[in-house]
Image (cartoon, rainbow, N blue to C red; front, side, top):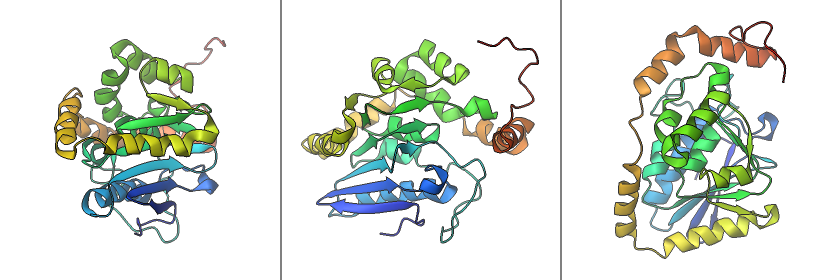
Length: 259
């Protein structure tokens, strides 16, 4: 199936579909078409009678670093709802998927990429993977993180990760409960398949009810504030310009002591 962009590859392995994020020229940064394509892949495994599970992974040493701040499309990308709207983003579709969704995190995983891993049923992680929640560095109010991260790691650690935007390694990510399984890098593919096989041993209807109960632990996602800020606040624009121009944004105080 064509997922609407050449930057996503869909491969089948028996009843399991692999969605491979493959945009090496931009380090797998996710365009709107790619976000929507991942959502399409989730819909596919929930509607195609020959498919039972989805594994999402990346290419090279990057899983996904989040959205392309330039908002660019690649040649051949299908147009999707303008901007990054709740209709485009795949996170709720992943979270509520009846078919199991496994994240095989092969490397750098942050921002929207980390949300994909968090919302998956199981995140199987290479020992080389690193994680970060960098949205506030760009002036972005990420309501999905504010609603979901505390349920994974607790409020104190969620404050730390969101407000400091620091990078953590795979071991710390597992220790704090951000991800569940770490494996040697060369075993990632087989370990992801094993996780999918394990989940598929469970009864689908009962599994769906348990997932619904688990998802009730999350807070309400305040998309209204998030998208209002993206459209009206000067901070996301300044954060994106600073990133593109490789400079510090104008809100960083002058004379800040160096570490």
